[in-house]
Every structure is written in structure tokens, then in C-alpha cells.
Amino acid sequence: MTKILAISNQKGGVGKTTTAVNLSAALGMKGKKVLLVDLDPQGNATSSSGLEKNKLTDTAYDLLINGSETKSVIVKTKFYDVIPANQNLAAAELELVGVKNREAQLKNKLHQNNQYDYILLDCPPSLGLITINALTAAHSVLIPMQCEYFALEGLTDLVNTIKKIKKQINTEIQIEGLLRTIYDRRNKLTKEVSDQLSAYFPNKVYKTIVPRNVRIAEAPSHGKSAIQFDKRSKGAKAYLELADEIIEKEGRV
Image (spheres, rainbow, N blue to C red):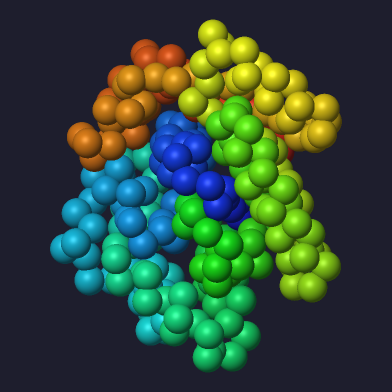
């Protein structure tokens, strides 16, 4: 069975796209068939996958708005497949408003694709209709969290949204896990927030911690995941560990 995993946090700069790209690469390297769906109009997951987003003619926008079939918008890369995005997707928020069954447009497309082990949805940093589509389609949500005070505030809003989606639209959805990212062990506040996360969400915080790492930051400018850019870096090793943790949890060894 395909696992659809939304990677979401409406707060920007927490490593959401970095997690989507590197987890896709890590799962792919471990032999899993992975589809990464870029749902952010910034298209950072697309460019980080080595694709020139402004030259693409078939994207997530066409999937959601123009009725394109999923297979027609998929682009293959070395370790995983991609449904790319660019600035055209920004218009989808408004155009979806008048569409019948608007929150389920993505679900209707993705649930036809059972050839993948994992479908990862890189959500935009907002709680608009595109994110609602992702949460309606997903089985669960992976939440990247930078361990700082304002990140906790944003987490409350996201959790409340997930609860509403579960009650009204998608009864299956649950929080898959919270991933601590851009982690600086020297920072006292970082540890305090990390401890709070573990207390509030017992058994939901991943053991894996993604450290603050220069190689992770450098990789997107080369159109690569950190795993392809420097597999020996601390950041790459962390995402490989996360992939192992997810696979083990699913019993998909």
C-alpha cells in the first residue's frame, strides 16, 4: 500500500522543503519507490531536485486545475520521481475556490497511483487550499520543527487544522511525527523547546535530529539533495537515519 505523507508547517524556514527532498532521496537510495509532489509555488523542491522550474510546461498546477493526468506531469530523477511546481501554482489557491469538491482534487489524482511505496507532499508555508488538499490526500503528516519559541506557536495552529480535517474530511489522517531540524546543541533554548515537544507529543518525536549543517544549505544551489551532494555530511547522515526510522516504523524493511 502506498503511504502518502504530507510534510507541513506553515512557519517558513524550518527545513520543510529540505526534509521533503532529502527524505525522498534517502528513501529512494534504500530501494523504495518514491514520488515527491512539490505543492509550493516557490518551487524549491523542484529546483533542489535538479529541474529548471521556469522551463516546465506540465506541473502541479496542471494536475490541480487543468485536469492533467498524474503520469503526464511526473518527471523522473535519479532516486525519486517528482511532480514539479513553479510560480503558476500561486494562482491555484484562487482558482480552486469555485471548484466542486475542491479540497479533494489532489486526493482524486494521487490515489490512482499505487506503484509507489511513498508519496511525499511538500506543502506551502500556509494553511490555504493547497495545504488543505495535501492534508485531505495524506495518510499522515510529518512536521519539521525548528526548536525555537515561535515554532511552538505555529505548531498549535497546524495541529488544530489537522484535527478539523480529521473530523470533517479525512478520518484517516494523523500526525506521523515531529522532526527536530536546524538543531544547535549549544543553544539552551533549543534543548528546552525539544524537551517540551517530547513532553507534549510523547511517542511522536522522531529519534533522528537534523543538525544545523552547511552542506545541507549548499546542496540546493547545485540542484541536488544533501545526500547526493555530500553523503558523508552530518545532515545527509541524519536524513538517511530518518528514512531507516520511517521504514522500520512501517515494517517495510
